[in-house]
Image (cartoon, rainbow over all chains, first blue to last red; front, side, top):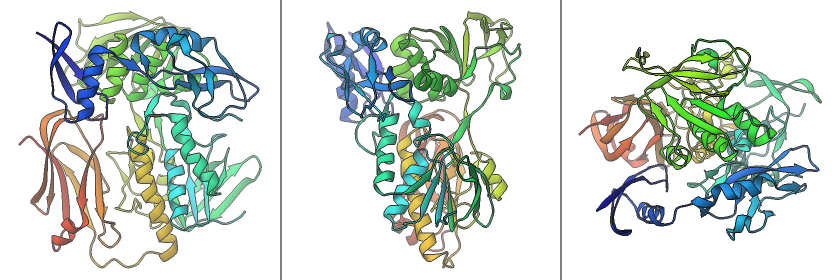
Length: 119
Length: 421
């Protein structure tokens, strides 16, 4: 039996969660104090995902960088492929929160959107 | 200069939430003074997500969280002045400020809300030997350079201190192609949030060296590397444990200090533990009508708590302007921190002014596992809450009902403590 120790990041509690696995199957999740911990641990050992935040260059404004994020979480293994695309992207002012800056970034099916208003 | 009932010093998360709450509580004469060229404060450079889980039940980035409050300030037509530096707050609540358009001006306010935030502990406060080469940044300065200005401070990074900004920057620099060698932390525990250690260090295999510190910085024009050594229980470097790390940049994330120069010169009584003002249940300082909230009061790890406290400060400021200070019907109750709890906010409570609930926030001085947070009312234990872990990097809170306090006739002291059983 394989044991994986995780720190739940669902809230600031940071519960120490133990996942017991055998042949890639989850046998037991312990240590969590709520449902979020259980869901997080199961996902983290099978399909870990993250939201990526960064900035892109912006033209036509006093600001030089526009903060952006992936509209939803992407596979952890795609983070650096996503960053590569973000690093070559440009935006043009005006921009509003939620405006799509990159469509379907790095084949993840997820858009990169603006996270601040720049007039 | 137009006169105002409530002047708010600082347009960051605390100032914005205080302004919105004061306005909603019925005051129409509010002015926010902000020294930067935009509202939002430090949130503007905190482009990572994780803000607002408590308040909005979703994970926002810093700029998104700020915009929720900035939009409200604009909708509610609350006045604000940007690029404006407050120079002085007098004990009679006259606020002296200056900017390029108005020059120097004074506003005789009825209430003042202190929301100046905090600043980073600089290298000069750390006593690290070595020259003063380029390439040494506080983590927040580096964050501003990367996220707002669009510059990379360096390619090979060592971070001293495991505060949240340092952890966030470890990931940020990794995303931008830099190599983060390690994060060294003097204490045997991290000063940052657990989730940041997981998502910013563990995810990218960045080592966290607990009980380690930088003992030498190599390089005269530019940082070439640092020597890191293990420290003993008294935080003294252990000879023979020194190890050299090559790097072109050293980032410091070694603590935040509330920015209280204005509060001090106004004569506000300060808590030496938090470096912030002592406040009562209404977030009012020792000067009647002067309130404090956010990181100027005590350094927070969650902006949600800042907004919540600031909203209360705003409401109480509006109530004070409307009704003034009525004579209290009973003596104030003291709130004391002992046995592991380092401080409490607030430190006094008046039952007359208290709403239905009293939230007491505090931090501990060491890591406690399977310990209890207890509250005593004049020696009688009323709360005994088990916690799997309590750490200095995460603010704790206990919530007491007003009935509990009023039921205890003649209550003089509320004690918050951490017990092992």
